[in-house]
Image (cartoon, rainbow, N blue to C red; front, side):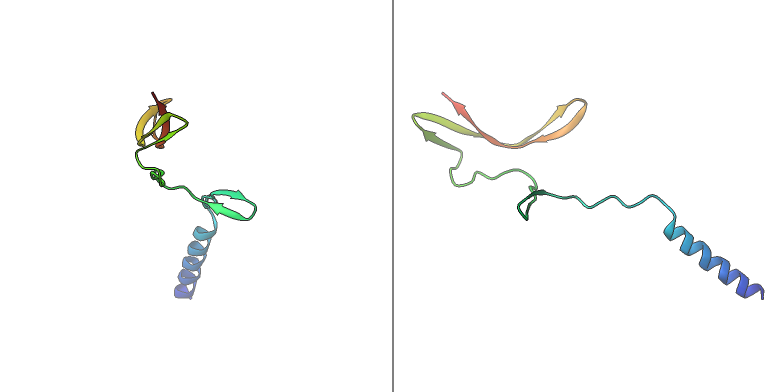
Length: 85
């Protein structure tokens, strides 16, 4: 009788411990557009233009991504092309 009671109590505690608790957070979701999902991880590559390109006589230079402090938090700034000269 005691063994059955201890076993039943153990099963109840295990199952109640699994059920009780905060709900799990939802999985991360990318940008959804017309049924497609895009997830950007890390920095963008050079694409096909390389470290710079010239368009209408202006030179655009690739600025690589870097870590910066914004509003007291450390954030990743993505790389981008910028106009030089």
